[in-house]
Length: 370
Image 1 (cartoon, helix red, strand yellow):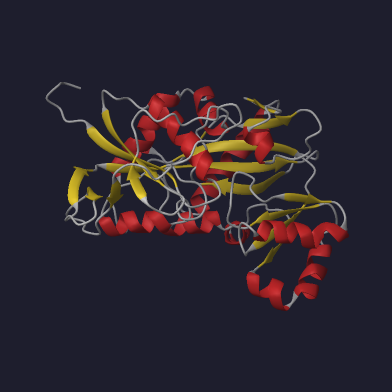
Image 2: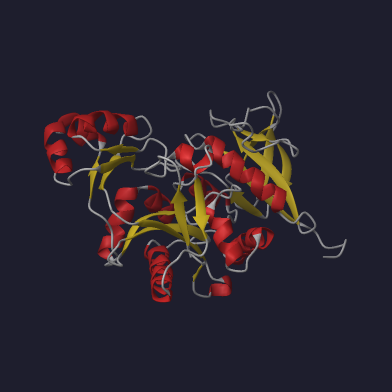
């Protein structure tokens, strides 16, 4: 790009109000260190735990160090996004002063995980403001965040999902005995999860009926809606999906297998991010026809939910050769240990090229109905 050509201004938004605040910060740190600064001007926007938007320091260290997780402190100039599609500008908000334009933004990269970020909320705000953004739209973001509705749509499309029971807040408060009886029909063990959370927050493996209530209450600390899933014997395989460029078909990456060492028997938060007991096999030891099938199913799962931009689709591969969909993540982690960028690197798209692809895909589509 010549010196006379303006850079594309990208607002990288991270942090947020969910329990995945710190992991969002780690993701943002990795992305901002890889983005091509000759082509893109980065505006780092942190969202504090209380919901305030602030202009984050450009040199802020956003990484896990000695087991400590980074966060947005709330220091810095407070920002807002005006709901005027003619503006596309971030505004600086100072007490006693009229909000002033900080910069017009060409595209937003919302590296937010969990509620109030990955669930259609910020996507709706950006649509109202007429600003292009990376990732899925309002409806697909909301549906993919809710594991119950996600699986319902997959079932309606004839895609393979495991047995599960969804427990909403009203059912738990008013019909607890009947709800527990339904859960017990799944057998043991089961996995109890918040229905609308990620990064393995609030998940418990339950092997005794006496532990069910405590596990459900633990999940409810993250989300009043809980999903209980029957255990599936199988290998954990993930596959990345990218929206096709210029209206082309979605593409699937080389898959990865999650390998766990030590005494860990499921993929919890510590296993994912802190204790170093997991590794990835890319590509996994699978027959070619199994790889082709999981790539086909990953794209089918992506398209069934009307996803855009990117997603990571998680599967179980059973000993008898069946694929079972577990869940989809519309803003998968980009941390150094994350599967999504590693799978695409193995597919020929390195980290900077992957970030560039996401931004260019977002710039190609209009804001609003599409």
